[in-house]
Image (cartoon, rainbow, N blue to C red; front, side, top):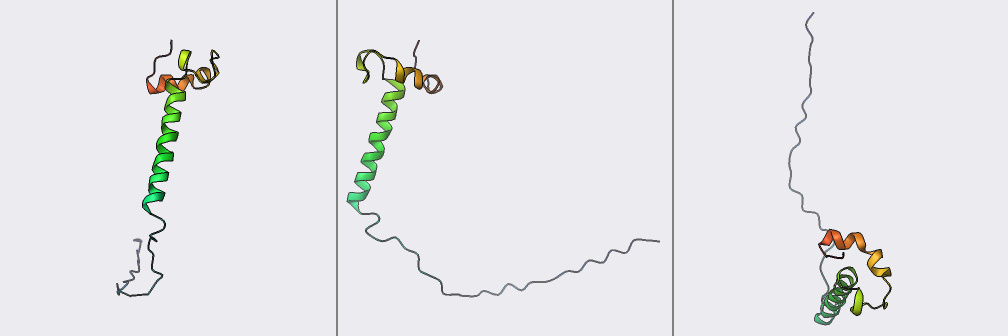
Length: 86
């Protein structure tokens, strides 16, 4: 006996429906020049601080003196980022 394959196909009509929804917008207070300036300044400061501690903090310019605590703490990150350290 042959296999009988019966598939049902359903056609879905594409009807454009315009449903009013909530209006999404950005308030002027969210992107004020002052707020953008502060956020950009804080971001740049934190990036430079991370760069210093990963790449520069050792020897005479060390924040913690002659200890190599920060150097050892970020040792693998220094190699990964290409900073020479020994």
